[in-house]
Every structure is written in C-alpha cells, then in structure tokens.
Image (tube, rainbow, N blue to C red; front, side, top):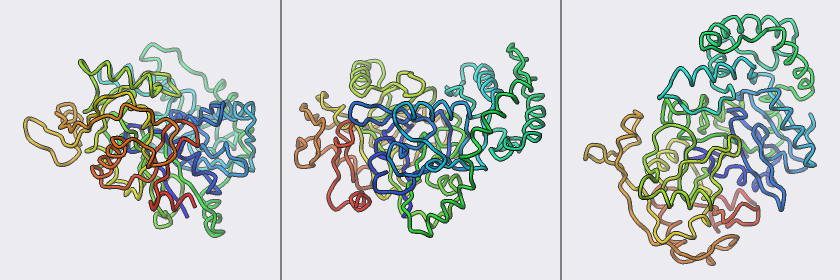
Length: 436
C-alpha cells in the first residue's frame, strides 16, 4: 500500500501531525519534493519537533525514511537537522534514513541568487524563504545542477562549482553583493558530501524492492496544492510539484502503485508571503484574523513570519480535491474556531459581477475575486482534545458536514489539538481503513 499525503491549501495545514499519526501503520515514510523551506511541527507530549527536510516518520523508532530524487537538499541544513534530532533523542542513521543519489544539492550561490531574485522583482516579489530552493530547481531544469551523486566525485564537484559560480557571480555582483569563491564552496561542500555518503542510495530501487515485499509506504508532500508550480497561484508558487502527480515522479515510483491520496485541510485558510488570497480577513475582520492567528499559533515554523489568515475557501479546496483525487480529507485545527460566534465559508467566486465556476489560472483574476460566503453559526464551546464525533457540539458537526459536502470528499479525520491523541477518526471512512 502506498498513500500520498497532500496539503490542499497554501501549506501549513498540519501535515506533520497527520504523517506522525499514520507513520505507526507504515514501514517507510518518504519526502518527494521541496527542500528545507518546508516546516512540519510535531508535538509528542511535552516535546516539540520541527522538521524541515526529514520526514515526520523519523520520530517513530523502527521506521525507514527517504529523501526522494525530486527534492533539493542543502547539505549544511541537512546535518543541522540530523544533529538536532540526535540531541532530542531521535536516532538518525544510514539504516533509518536514505537519501536519493539523484536529488539535487542547494549550493551557497543558490541562496545568494535567491536574494538577488527577490530584489530584482521589487513590488512583484514572490515572498520566498530565501533558502535557495528556486535557484536550485532552476539549475536542475537548466541541466547545470549538482546532484548528490556528482558531489561524491571530488573532481566533478569542483568543476561543476567553478562552472556554475562563474555565471552566478555575474548576477550576484550586479546587485551589489560580494562575489563567492569556488575554493571556499568546494572545501565546505566536499566535507559535507563525504559525511552524506553513507546515507546515499538509489531510493527508487529501494522503494521498488520494499513494494515487492508488501511494505507500506507513506509519501509526504511539502508545501501544498495551491503552491504547485503548474497548478497553483502562479507565479506566487513554489518551484516543484507538491500535488499527487508529483509524488510518482519525485519518489521514482509508478503512478499505478499509489493506493490512495489523503488531503490535509484546515478549518480556515492561511498563506505565508506574497500572492492572491481571496478569503483573506482584512480591514473590519482584522480582529478575527488576529484571534485565529493567536489561537492557532499561525507563525511559520521555519521563517517565524506571521501567516495571513482567511475563511475556509471551498472553491479552492474543491479544486485541490479534484486535481489530486483525494480519497479522504483530514480536517485540522477545529478547536481554533471554538471562540467564534459566526464562521464564514466561501462557496463561490464572482469576478466583475459574473460567477466563476473554476479556479482562475491568472493571478490578476484571483486578486479581483469577490468571495461568495455562507455564514454558519459557531458553537462557542471547547472542542480541544475531543476524540469522539458524537461529543462535538451540534454546530461543530454541522460545520464539518458542510465542508465535506462543499468540497465533495469525505472528512475521515478531525484534529482537535496538536497532540497525537487529540484526534477523531470517523467510523466507516476510508481514513479509518488506513489506520487498521
């Protein structure tokens, strides 16, 4: 069995907790795209784990984790996270963690280029995390990237750095930044590459063999559907494909081997950085946004930036469900809405007075959208920590049912808090079958 976990909004939906919950039922947890711009927070008792590159399954003893070929990996950030996990008592060894030989490396000049790119765009900046993700993917598409396997051959690594840096420095210096030096980069990366060597393997072969042995595999996406470079709110997107179609490519597995797709959805919507956000709470709703931000701790786990908050967007989420083929949805942070008298849900879009039936491709159209809302009554009572559907207030159950009907997919899991046990698994759902 191979299950893909996908964020259905603009990220930060709570994928880390859901992966952590499911990991006990699976043998392997694999990341298939993105880099350390992702941030998953997992809470186990009094311990909090913030994972950027490593799959959430690493917290579970006896589980094997994989960083797939579709990822871009900063070797320095990789070992910072590995060392941090070790300090927190989590074993991270080559037996437990496999790194694809075909994954691309993020180099120091990629980070410098990320800064210059944002400066060049000015008012149209994307709002990236400035960790070099985009420039690394640009080099990959431009066939000048440095793969993990390349870094393990010293003379090849050195020549690739020299070649790429000559071009990168032209841009870096043009924007008033000091040039980088090939020898310094080589000396840094070559040492890290040697330390990385024991973790490196052909991960697509590893996953294929695991499938033959009937091992259960969980594929973990970073970012989310509306940040997909093809299907998201372009150009305010990430540089990879977090959607279900990207899972097969980024992990190196046949698409027909995927058994199911789970979408992760918040009870409201957030966005970090720039870009259109139709249901954002602005002006008169700023107080509600601040309340949600405070109750939901809506600050980036990597960047610490405050997240923009908005009402649930059923149009965008239905688009994500159709695009990914969700079999079930995990609904997170229900308890955050406990304090609200009324809760709005966007059920349609209008542009220039005309109703729009599809999610617009043009970011300018998205900025001009007038959301069509339905307002539901809040429940004004605490749901934090509830584990049974029947214990939820009537209005909370009605809200969950309304969201499920609006997006056309069952809701199989409801998260009522950050802890593992603060979860409701709905009976007779597809989700329940995955937990068996």
